[in-house]
Structures are given as structure tokens and as C-alpha cells.
Image 1 (tube, rainbow, N blue to C red):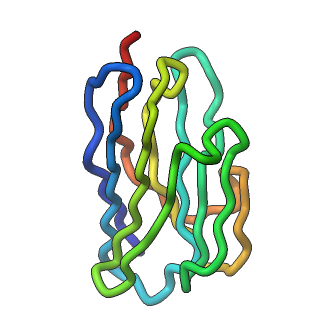
Image 2: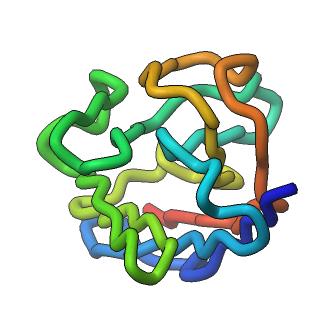
Length: 124
């Protein structure tokens, strides 16, 4: 099994930045693609960003392109989500996900492992 633990969420004002981290433990050798999803109040879980094992390939939700950057440090089994120019509509619980395949999927069923999530609240 793989365990994922997120950190870095919080309450911020619009326009500022936050950096989320997700540390993987356990059978990390099986982890390939890693990603971030979010679920806002009254909304379904949605894809935010994902990154390949090497870090050479990434995918983003259209509304976060140019504002969010996903990266990873394989030596530390950690994936990051740098979020700049935050907007109130970015308010959500952000969850880290990991897949044991090389497919950079954008739906929850593409991922095997999930973290508990970290709350990000952006006030206007």
C-alpha cells in the first residue's frame, strides 16, 4: 500500500500564493503518476493537475493553467502544487492522488491511492 499525506492548506486572501505538499510513504516504488484533485462546497471532485514519474510531462485543468504549477521530488517521494494568484473559486479540499500506471489521467478512477485532503479557503 501507499500512504499519502497532504500539507500546506490554509485560509488566505485572494491574490496570494500557497504551496501544497504531498508526501508518499509505504510501497513508493510502485508510484508512477501523481496528481491533485479538489472538491469545492457542493461540487464534485475535479482534476487540478498531474505529473509523470520523471516530471517531464504535466497536465492541468484549464482554469489553473498559468497560475498553478505541479512538481515532484522523487528522492523525497513528494509532490508539490504551487498555487499563485489564488481566487475565491479555488476554495476546496485539495487531495493528492497517485497511480501505479504511466497514464496521466484526469478522472478519479485513474488513480489508485488517495490522501485525506487539505482545506484551502480563499477569501475575497
